[in-house]
Image (cartoon, rainbow, N blue to C red; front, side, top):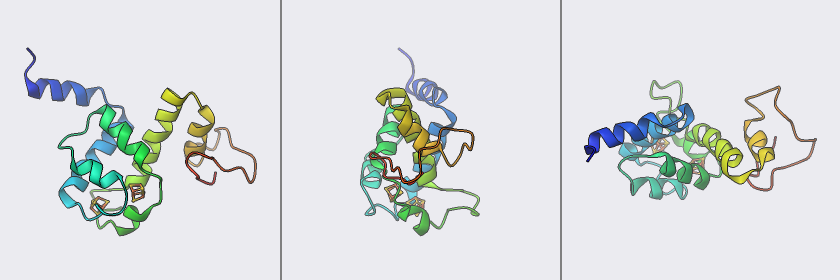
Length: 134
Ligand code: SF4
Ligand code: SF4
């Protein structure tokens, strides 16, 4: 049987860069917990000691990108911890839409501001799932 620490290392190695960034930030948030009453993400986070791919996808889809934790965070950039939970969650959430929902329009919506060459929705269009203005 594979030792537990090797299994954890294997699971972490399988994370994408975006997922690894969410896991890094959640480790910091789990020690801090200042935002635990802000939304459903933080209570779900406190039930976990480590963050595998499925946990990260779950947390990313609990986030509705309100930005409250970013504005409250004492570790947000320019702090060296660079905690920006909505940004990190948004990147993973967009990827899960593309991977699992088969709705590339949603993924385009959440990544539109990061990719100028990416598909852009028409003026006035608002994503019905994430409610983010393009
Ligand atoms: S977002 Fe910042 S303030 Fe909020 S729990 Fe995480 S580290 Fe703490
Ligand atoms: S941005 Fe996401 S994680 Fe942060 S308080 Fe809002 S819903 Fe919660």
